[in-house]
Image (cartoon, rainbow, N blue to C red):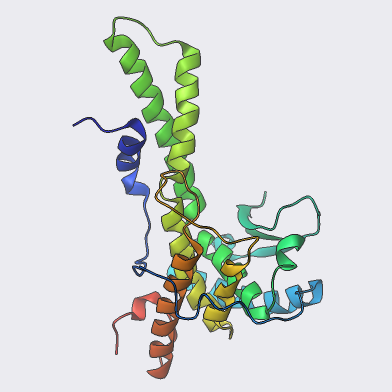
Length: 265
C-alpha cells in the first residue's frame, strides 16, 4: 500500500510528538454549551493583575517540569500588544536574549469576560514553552523539508529524469509546512492540559477560563484535516474539564496539582 506523501511525512516525524499524557475527550465538557457569564471586558489593569499571579506560578511549574533547563528557559516576559491590526490572538515566541515571550493582542483581551479566561490563555501559552513545542516544531519543519525534497528528487531520478531545483524547493516548502503542523493539534491539547494545572495553581478556575473557546470570534470547529492547526473548541473544553477534575482530586488529597501526581492517592 502506498501512503500519500503527507501521511508518510507525519509518520516519519512521529519522534517529535507530545511529551505529556493528554486525556481523551470524546465530547463537549459539561455545561460547555452554556454561554459564558456576561461581564466587563478585561482591561490593561486587569492584564497586569492576572499576569502578576500567573507568571510566578508558571515559572515555578516550569522549573519543576524542566529541572535541567537554564534559568532563562523559565523566565517569562509577558506583553500586551495594542496594535488594532493584530487579530484576536495570543502566541509564544523567543526574545533575542533567549527568554520566552508571551504576547496577547488587545483584541483578544477585549473578548475576555473574566480573569479566569485571561489566566487560562496565559497559562496555555506558557505551557507551549514548558513542553518545548517551538523547538519540536522547528525540528519537524526541517525534517519535513528534507523528506519531501528528497522524495521529489528521488521520484525524478526514478523516472529517468532529474527533478528541477525549483520543484525540489517547492516540495521542501510544502514539507516544512506539513511538518510544522503534524502535531499542532496534539500540542494544543498538551498546552491546555498543562495550562489547567498552572491556572489552578495561580488560584483561577480553568473550566471558567476555557469559556474563552466558546467565543464566536475564537471558536474552532476542528476536524480531521491533517493541516488543521487547532482542535475543535468543544474537545478542548472537555480536556480542560477532565484535567480540572484531576486537579481537584489532588487538592482534596493535599497534593500540589501536578501531572506527576495523576493516579496518586
